[in-house]
Image (cartoon, rainbow, N blue to C red; front, side, top):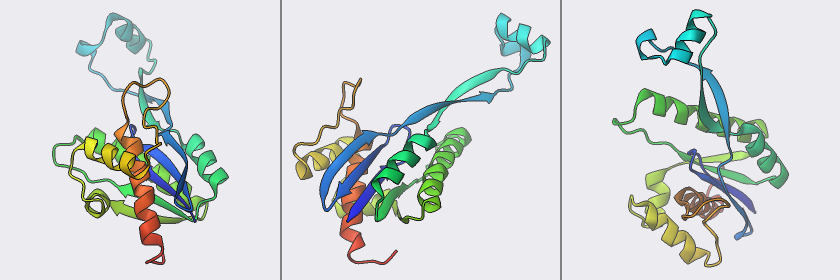
Length: 184
């Protein structure tokens, strides 16, 4: 059985399991999106004021999930199941953070649904409870390394282990345990 586990955050990851063996583990592909901003004239720099007077829009770049890259990865792997962590929004998150997260998760759902794959949406407390993990990111890294001793959680051009990659791997393992018990 082929399963993809996805931690949908911008610092998340994507894990590919085939018959319980890890075939690929990557950091979430991210792209830059130029967006218009509305700044008050008082807070603008001199250059921004110049553009504002010329009625040219001011652009700001924000990170988003690279839909094309994820689409290609999912399409080439042809999974039986895609496991995506269902986001939990705390009251402390700003509307911008919640909106960006929801947009990125929607992109991932759209890719999997559009390609016709089964999706398992899992709240973090469900899969973390299955592995008996706490809220600490280091717990997920330790568990992933315990289950897959040869796993490399340090992607290219990074110095530290990425908890998003570890969580994606654990989501895929969780999905493989659930896929035999449920019909999605």
